[in-house]
Amino acid sequence: MKRLGFVLWLFVSCSAPIEIENSETRDGRPDQEGWNVTIYMTNEGSMTAKIHAGHLEKYQEKEFALLDSGVVIDFYDSDEKHISILSAQRAEVDEKSNDMIAMGNVIAISDSGMTLYTDTLTWNSKKEIMFTQDSIMLTTQYQDTLYGVGFESDSDLENWKILKPSGVTNRELKND
Image (cartoon, rainbow, N blue to C red):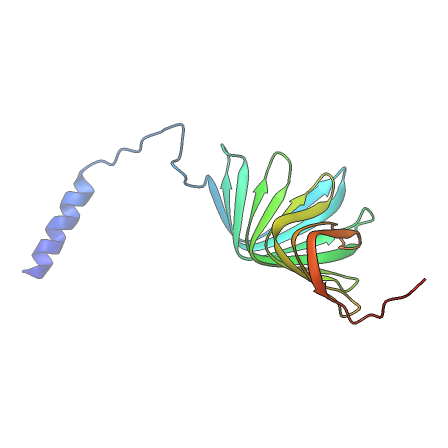
């Protein structure tokens, strides 16, 4: 009796034609998806960033892409030399500007030894700067640990500022 019920259900479900509505909006569904993707960002022909993610959702009408499942971003200088790496749980990329917002356990590590920890970090692709209004922790190559709220830096974490700083240093003060 169970088998007859299943066969009857299968017949009924397959006999009715399925209509697909062609509408302007997709009600939040992505237009494209990809897995294990790599995106190259350029500025006037030079690579500025290489993004790798386990999953990508592309929204054509909204002109942005959502990346998740282990986002890793390598940053490069104008000579395409590697300068820093960033990891986050997810990121959004604005396809008009190529600006990006990294979110969730964001860690940025420069090749010179600086490490930034925060919850969100925005990257402006034209100016090649990173910034956040969130709480941050920054460790330097000199074993300093700095804390604050609000941060701005170039992509290699060389020229940076903390808007509301606090922290500890192991360096001696020099009296001039």
